[in-house]
Length: 228
Image (cartoon, rainbow, N blue to C red; front, side, top):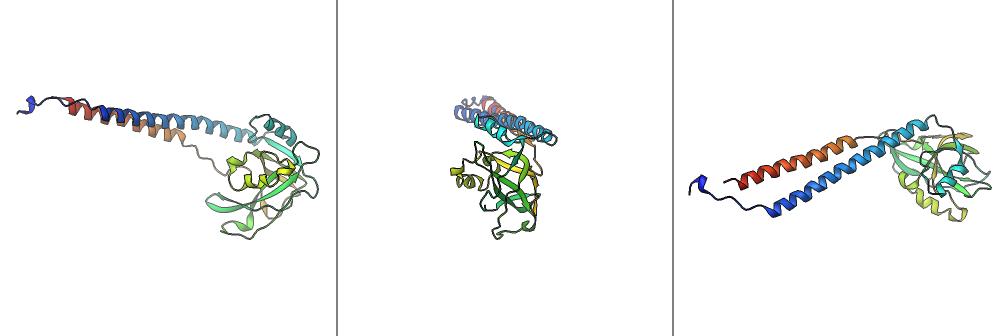
């Protein structure tokens, strides 16, 4: 039989369904990255505004959190009750490519709806790069200024530490200390991430590009299969 006399192939139903499913997944991933881009741009704008934002009393911010409002990155000030707090474990982290350890302390709140707020005092200078440092405890300062962050956004054992203070009605957020009075010896406050990458537009274009490429490949295979 000559080449011109060959019959057309059958329409590839299974291949078409698989292509449509893959196309939908790729477009979904691209759309998700676009949403992440908008979220990241809003986050970066909030952090930039935060650098010059005035503080609000911690009690006011926590009352907003109790009502379900978003108080992440809200800048607050608080006074810690004298002698409050129990020793807390160090929290592991990575900053500028180095292994770091963050100091925690419990700040007692007198006469407030929440009896205690956990403080992230900052980086323990002498422990940078160490894998398993010896436990150390740090007393809470008398007064702190910092930003609130949800424990889930921070990771580590912070949620576990919160559970240990259940009887004290702990605040739902961690106070990332900017300044402490008196300053905590050997600790450098680091309330905000050193660098927040924002490559979501690049990722979105990659997923959408793969989706378009998939359609071209499918169209070429379909044309080759269906032509006489």
